[in-house]
Length: 217
Image (tube, one colour):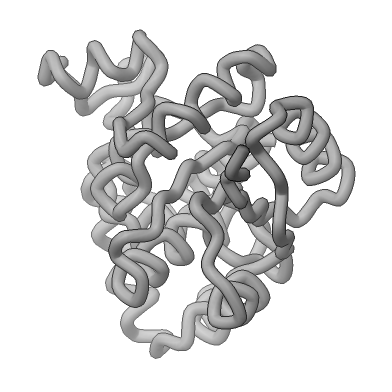
C-alpha cells in the first residue's frame, strides 16, 4: 500500500505530536516532515515535497500561516494545503481558500473531522465545516460582528496581520520592522483599519485588537 506523505507546520510540539498521532493511526498516512515557522517550512519543502501540508495560522517567531500558504502557492502551485488553527473560522476560512489552501479545520473540531478533511484535500476536494460552507457558498451577508460592530472580515490580509500584531502589543515601529515595511506604510494601514472598523481613536484600535487576539487563543 502506498503511503500519503504529510508535513505538519505548527509552533507547538504537543500540537504537532497530537496531529501526528491522529494521522499515523491511518495505515496509508504518514507524517514525513515537521516545521515550526515560515522559513523553516519553506526550507524543508525545498528538500522534498510531501503530498499535503497542514499549516497553523500562528507560527514561530511571529510567523503568519496565511503568508506561508500564499508563498507555497506561488512556488509550488500543485501542492495541497490544509489549514488547522484556533483562529476565528468566520474570519479566516474563506481567506485561506483564496490564498491557495484547499480547506480549513478548527482545532476545536473532533479528531475524525481532521482525518476527513485530510482525505478530502488529498483527493483534490475542498473542505470547510458545514456552517462556514453555507456562509461562503450562500454568499451570506457579512460586515458586522456579533456585537453589531463592523467586522474584521472587511479587512485585507495585510490589515488583519497588522491588527494581530497590534493585539500582541507591538508598536508601529516594531510592526514595520516585523513586516519589512516602512513606518509610514504601517500608519496608513492603521488609518484604513480604523476607518473600516468605525474606530476614531488609536486607543480603541489597540483595545479591540488585544481583545480579538486574546479570543483567538
